[in-house]
Length: 365
View 1 (spheres, helix red, strand yellow):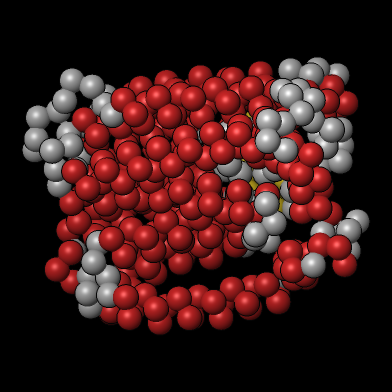
View 2 (cartoon, rainbow, N blue to C red):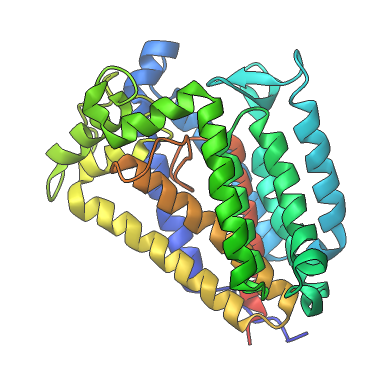
């Protein structure tokens, strides 16, 4: 094991801090009108976001200073606990339904999403498994199917909620991790074809998913139904122009754009801060992803390298899908923008994961 450096990756810390700060500001700007209408307190959402950001930063500092090899020991236990939580959340009367999905555990307005915990637990487990089984990863049955089967089992439980967005992010990050570990492209190609067929089946099995696809292909065919979110998102982005309407000056947040503080917060960023503000945020994410990849390349061991790949993949996949949805390049999925969108479980777990990534950077060669 290489000797730890005195400080973690500075570029990564700065990018995380700036993205988080922008997120808190934009959560307030995007949610103030909605919060006052629903709760009579325009600071309702931002106060909760600050609370979870504080918890997350505390978790980041803790994991940043804890040797990442500790997670190798606890990865299997963490995965088992998350599987149990995914089963418990499906029990009627126990799991809380929000947004049409039974994906929450908690009391009143406070709760956790087991699927968010599963993302990190799956990456920890796969990094351990693949670092110990590298000699068999090129074999389809002995090497590829066991870790992929574990990821698909978790995906199946998440789909029972149903929560296609979280499940898709977990599977995509897992596949990138498996590919990095040395899986053969021909094996992954065959699985990709099977996955496309399965995805088509899932879409056809649920009418609302089919409506989202039709709304994506031609939102103007049903502007008040399946195409409403995409159209309102583009109505926000378009007027933003180069420099935006100004911070706090969004028009679409006045009950036109659904979920302006969560799934479509980037629309408000583009409307208020314009092309320059939206591009600056994307650049910050690119810096974060670049430093995550660099950390993976220079990690002192295979476990640390794969763990860095997995954590970076979760961030990258979510950014790609969220912004793709907001600009009309992908169907609506319900995936939030990392560190920016309002959300307790997601924000806290992402900051915890980034703390682990920062700890790996301290041991980089």
